[in-house]
Amino acid sequence: MEGLSYTFKAYGHPNIRATHKSTFEITRERHVTPRGDCIIAVRSECSASSLPNYIKEAIKDDDVKIIIILKSGGITEVVNAYGSKDLILESNDSLVVRKSGFVDERTIAIKADKAAKDINRILVDMLKNESTVLDITIKVYR
Image (cartoon, rainbow, N blue to C red; front, side):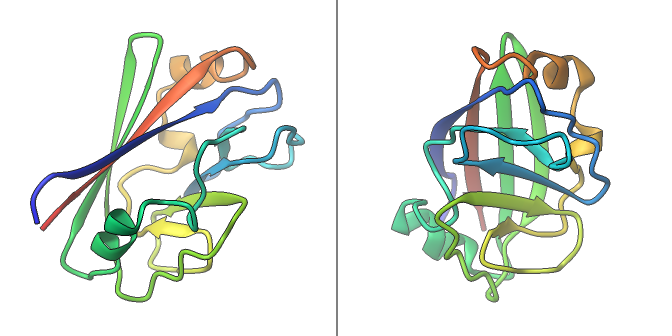
């Protein structure tokens, strides 16, 4: 398995802060409060449970590398992470990428090299506008 890929969209929101130190989250919710400091985008077309089966099967493996590419307005952020045989992938509301090895129903990748606070601040500022479209690509490599 080399280079499996899936792309979907999410959108900005005025309450995006992206200051969390160990995770980032993309949610299907339309509205979020400033307390959700790990959230980087809303109105997502996808959650952990709605990822295509070929991606879900691929990331449920300790030996795969996952690259998450976040793109908007000419800015690209690349996050390197890993899969896990322990992924649950049952959340209908969101997906989360974690620096730690913790897994819950929202987790799609662990041991990431970036969390919300590490994301390019120009991109984060753009995501404070609800008309901003964020393209998210998940690539899986063995």
